[in-house]
Amino acid sequence: MAAVTFGAMILTAVLCAKANWQKTKKNVSAQVDHALAESDRAKTMENVSTRLSKYLSAQLFEEILTGRQTDAITSKRKKLTVFFSDIVGFTELTDSLESEELAALLNRYLTEMTHIAEEHGGTVDKFISDAVVIYFGDTHSNGAKQDAEACVRMALAMKERVHSLKQEWMDLGLLNGFDLRIGINTGYCNVGNFGSNQRVDYTLISNEVNLAARLETAAGSGEVLLSGKTYALVKDVVTAKERAPLNVKGFARPVQTYQVETIESPKGAETQTFHVDEPNLTLNLNPAHLSQSDRDRYADILRNALGKLDQSTSQNKTNETPDPPLK
Image (cartoon, rainbow, N blue to C red; front, side, top):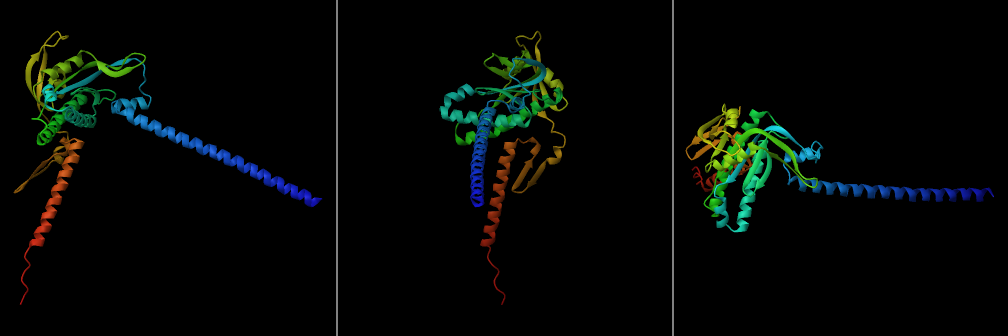
């Protein structure tokens, strides 16, 4: 009788253990499925966020992602430096290229301009065909003077980059080349969400924005045209030529304008200059004046040149006639 009872107890224990194991396995399986589902959702959200980030400026995307920027239709008044640029002769350019060539050229150009804007702290507001609108002073500002200076440095970096792009495209035979015209103005603007309850656009409005656009239109090929207010902020570091006052709708008086010629190197940039002038070798390099894309490209050129030099040195050693043996 005792043996039967003991056997029944063992059987009961085994059945309970099996039941507990099945329950544990089910719980573990459910937890694994939940974790996988959460992981899939996280990957999906990450992919969506990555795609959405390309529709917004880097600064605005970060503000939205961290919750500092809401979708409420509201704006704030800030002192901004506003940049407008477009390609001189773009209409004629569209007539001379196939649509695929034009799209490739325009996308390459806008990509390079966006990189330069981000390197200098500018917020890309929008692309309007070949035109680019950028502003400084929101969501982050280093102060009106520093914002204006950064904008002018960005404009000159863009001019330099377009010069190299123009040569690349001319080498490919796509076109005879093109150039930029740029207008920059500083003033108080309303910046924030504008639109409807269904859709908003984070942008800026004011007469100061219109003035920047008018300055761009008035600039000549390859020129950077500043308003008097922007020039007053950067005159300590910029060499500029005074231009004729500009009559602009919405402004009671003609607007004084200045054409940028040069800008001083950033502090400490002179110590980074590398200059060599030897027979068969001339090199003048200042990394402070280069965009990141230029740095990468020039580094590839220098590595390629060094490789050719090493190859030539090896060939010369191979072709050298050995000294005759001593008798």
